[in-house]
View 1 (cartoon, rainbow, N blue to C red):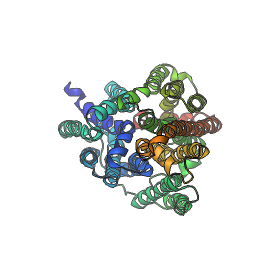
View 2: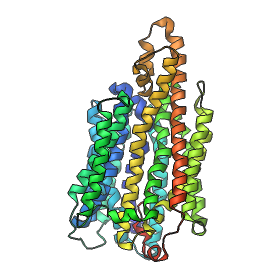
View 3: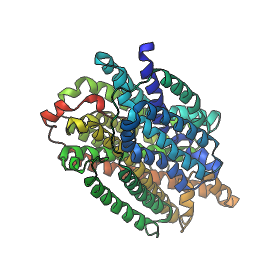
View 4: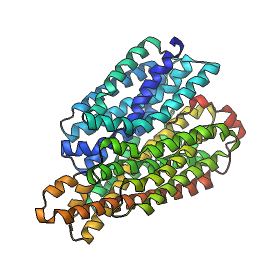
Length: 507
């Protein structure tokens, strides 16, 4: 048992930070009621965490190379634990969002150091076993998030989805101090501070513009300036990276069609696959009045299918073309979303989601395993860590952009239905529906009109979900086509042989 203590220390951290990606979904309606928050604030509760992970992961890796992976990992655990405490105690939405961002900072430090710590603790066959166990924990973490969050939210409070991190963090820190060690010499590597700042500002601006569009409409004064500023900052980031001796991401890698294709595939996969869970949870709890536990169980077909598909794929993956697996998996995700669109209508309930979720899960299980291995095999071995970090960053950016953009689609679908029934013209009622405040909307209506309003809310929320699934499905189909065209070639034998699987970053 002592031999596997470093693996346990690393897996505890991985479990927490990946559970926190999905555990929040089932608690969002209770957060909205307790904190009386807006729809855009709910979006930032999810996006703040994802953006911090996406923006800081590559920079955290550079810092760890300079001052030590063990130190950065343990510091990340401390930051994550303190931020979890702040989330649980948050008296208002602003404190909660800021605390979620800080959680993401700690999570980025933990992800960036995982493989270096495993490399320092294991060699040979034991290293392979350690990677296999870590991958199993990673795959299970996202799947069990809703299952853990439901009982905690229903039995105690939404605040306990964050408080539960504290004892796990304490064990991980105590164990890490005793058993973890750095496996390689530190490098006097220059940290690309300018690159981190510009990239963070770029994806933050794009996300802010999308969230603003969902809250105030695409004609809002704050929408297009933020989107344009984000695009300009992304171009600035590329220019800065060409002039930096040790960049976060070498622009020359983007000229590699396979690597660029993997980045696009990673972003579009997460965009199409995971965002529907967030808004479906709001629909199921605030409109259909399911309990948090039941809403969490609805996600089981997706997580179960993903786990089973990945497990079965591992036995035959070496015989298949990775580009076809990635493209086929994203196509299944798109088909699953479109199946949900076809089944969800004005009077649908939660069973309408199950077939689509199952197909989406199969797609995730097919596409995820070859993503990082294909991307890192397409670049020189000395850039494998950089490539793996970029792929994980793209996946988290897909979640952040999806939450922001598909939120506006959900609201627009709800508004169209309510306006068609002459319930509203301004869009405020649609934002109440999307923001898990349907009960408040009903209570504020005259008693004689509540029945008709309740019917309209049910139809509006279902149509909003259907519209969201339609857009996500089309994105999935487009992502599959892009992946098929860009990933037709195998990585060159030279780089494939050089790339080290232990450098791969995967969820």
